[in-house]
Every structure is written in structure tokens, then in C-alpha cells.
Amino acid sequence: MSLPHAILTALLEKPSSGLELTRRFDKSIGYFWSATHQQIYRELGKLEQAGHIRALPAPVPARGQKKEYEVLPAGRTELSTWVARAEDPKPMRAALLLRMRAAAVVGAPGLRAELRRHLDLHQRQLDEYLAIEARDFPTDRRHTEPDRLRHLVLRGGIDMERFWVQWLTHALTELDEK
Image 1 (tube, rainbow, N blue to C red):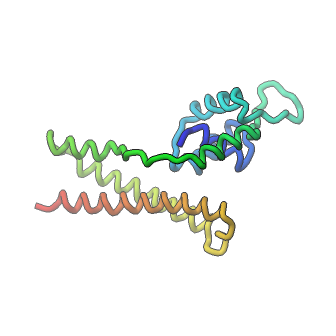
Image 2: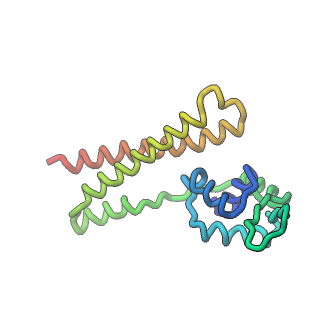
Image 3: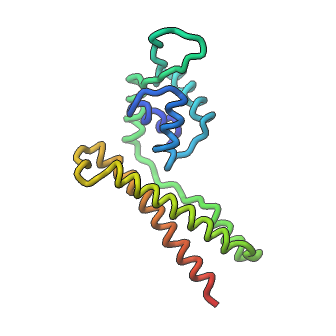
């Protein structure tokens, strides 16, 4: 996955200014594909230069006015091509797991506290995802394929957070065994 494709997806869902896009990004796509606001603005310029998006004309021209962007046919084609492309899974990169491996070699002062902190963070994220699911995806509103696809993405996040909560709980229990 790439940032340009994430931006094209978000703009196809709703044409937005850069600021609106970064705010929406933080509340949706940002849960599984992070980017800084600076990266998003830089990518908007590249997408516009490539002819994938354009700034909508302002109703009343004004200096310093926010540009609102929409996706052009070339951008939709690029996104469709990318969606259909085969891509192998990427190996997982988790600094916490690497740190645990290193702790096996050099010792683990503070490791349990860090594992508890991670457990708390993952539990909070899981709670947030479950609240989003209850609010946005009640069982009676999952009729269309786009709704089911969006819900499946959220379910992936829920399942990943459940994995981490379960794994971290197990890790702490195992480390506390004498």
C-alpha cells in the first residue's frame, strides 16, 4: 500500500481540502496507514502534478484560500489498477519483538513495564475500534458491498488489537512465572 493510493481513496470518498483530508485521514485511514500532515500535503502536490487529482475552482477567488481536491479519471484508473494488482504480504516489523529478542541477550530491565504499557495502549485502541463498530456498523446497516468492505477493514483492526492484547497478556504471565 502506498500513501498516494490512500489519499486517492479518501478523496474519492469525499473531495476535501488538504486540511480536511489530514483530519479525516487521522480518524480513518490513519488507523492502518499512518502519514504526517506534511507527507500528505507533499503527496497532494505530486498527485496533482501527475494529473491524478485537481484543485476544484473556488466559488470566489481569494488569496490564501484552501484548495479542495477531487480525483480525476486518471487517478481513479490508477487506484483501480493498484487495487487489482497482486501483492505478497510484507514481513511483520515490530520493534517491541526485536527489543524482546535483544533483552534475551543483554537483560530486560524495564521490559515488564513496557509490555504493560503496550498492553494498555492496545486495549485502548481495541476499545476505540469496538466503539466505532457499534456506532458505524450496526448489523442492520451492512447491506452494501462498500459497507461490508469498510467493516471488514475495521474488523481487521479489531482482530489485530485482540491478538496484541492476548499475546501481551500471555507474555506478561509467562515472564512472571518463577
